Amino acid sequence: MPHTRSVSINLFVGVGSRYESDEVAGVSHLIEHLVFKGTESRPGPSEISGPIEGVGGVLNAGTEQELTVYWCKIAQPFLRDSLDLLLDMVRNSVYATDDIERERMVVVEEQNMINDQPDYKVEALMDNMLWPDHPLGRDVSGTRASVMSLTKAKILEHVSQFYTPSNMVISIAGNVEHEEVVDQINEFSTDWKSTSVPGWQPFTRQQTTSNLRLEYRKSEQVHLGFGLPSVSAKHPDQYAVDLISVVLGEGMSSRLFLEVREKRGLAYDVHSGITHLSDSGAFLVNAGVDPKRVYDAVDTILAELGRLRDGIPLEELERAKRLTKGRMMLTMEETKAVSAWIGSQELLLGEVLTVDEVVQKLDAVTTDDVHRVANDLLHTEKLNLAIVGPCRGKVRLERLLKL
Image 1 (cartoon, rainbow, N blue to C red):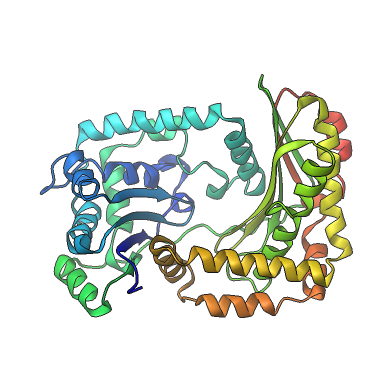
Image 2: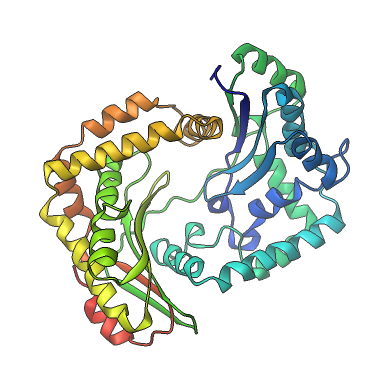
């Protein structure tokens, strides 16, 4: 991207919460925190964040179900030093006992913060319903009990198993030359030997009955979450599912926004979204509503989900395609987005589709495709509803759970 002045580095590690047993739940997330505490040559947090922030850059990380990513965005002249720092973090972190004790408490406070926010709590309940009795159904950070029980030995064992070159992808976008970057990576990792990596537990369960989780708490709004099992990131129908979500609840022209907010005034925020994982996925709808109007909101959203099975007119599908393609093209002007796009595909899929290739796949979706897929996915026995807020009408809500 020669027109840019920034460079973004994404260092992906092929490990996340689905690789963890109940005993070590949250260890990937805790490690993500700990690598910012210091290495042998950079012995404190200020020596990690300081060199990046001191030149106007941004340094951060994140843990998901199937990957952990460390990333920074810096001005182009500082690429070499930043690459050196990121590789030092993942290779040579000290994992001092004092840091582990402090950071496990930080993670517990992060868990408390999430639990205090009803919208996040709805997401946690939904994950548990969509992937019951499976690592995917747990919070990425684990539980308080599992985090408090993580020993230094367990942490170091997890690092040795997964933080190996064969399980990493370094993705860089910006005003850079490929061979120059490859030479720098080789220089910083020439003595780093690869080892084999454990796999993850597949998810094979088929949902056969609808589920409702209701958690009462005093809040100004009732937060709703609807979820249905969906297709994986490698499934040929993933683009049809994506477009159905756009039609339903992505943007101010979507069906949910127009019906729930504009026409009925039932919610300020209502939207849909998709999760694609390696072997499964989820079709999601979220909203925050007045406790006095929760049943109207549930009924309206369910009606819109059911209406998708009647089919999507060609004109509406074409609008969804234009929105999706335009949003993707605009996003890809930014170096961090390009770096994340390339690296995450390489790690999770083993191939990298270009924007033009994805555009072709979106354009190939027909009205027959979305009609078929909607009727495959949107069924009462596959429906999950999570509610957090001042609502006690469990029986009435269960009666509404039909499409």
